[in-house]
Length: 209
Image 1 (cartoon, rainbow, N blue to C red):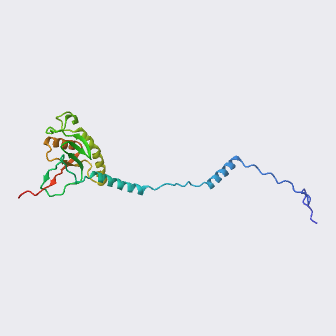
Image 2: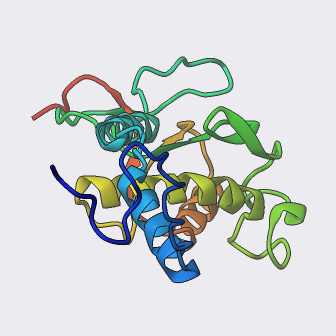
Image 3: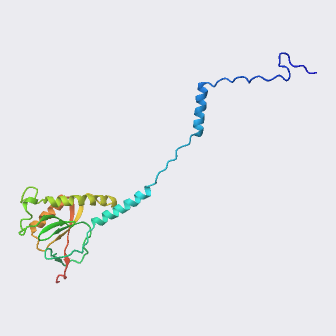
């Protein structure tokens, strides 16, 4: 017959409570907490809209619109206030540049009247439009109107690979425009960084040989 081990509980005796576990130390608790956080941590998903292609499209549209604004149509209505001179040249007129109209009553840029032309324009526009008085050649309101157009044209030239240092202008003047008035307009254009001018005329009959 088997004998119970010495000092042990007799057979059939009820078992006592399990030995108490040692409480986890604070360092171990923090280590397990960090491990659990790292295990459950997920990298945040970055949700964004790729607008690179959209920006390229908008740039192309912007260049197209600026280029369209820099071009002026050669189809211009004539009236008793504006009669264009005729030319015997057969080359095609330039379509690039800001259109500056000099009629018998006003100077117009982009369909906006910038200065009135007096009935007797042999001395140019009135002194109130000049920078320093009647003898000056610089027409201040004309220069102000050209400045914004010049800045737009500069951006177009930079975008299209052209020389941005100067712009072009198409001067549409009445056939009877006084020389002084035309000189004032051309001088103001030059001072506003317009280095090339196109004087628009109507194509007439060929000159006799």
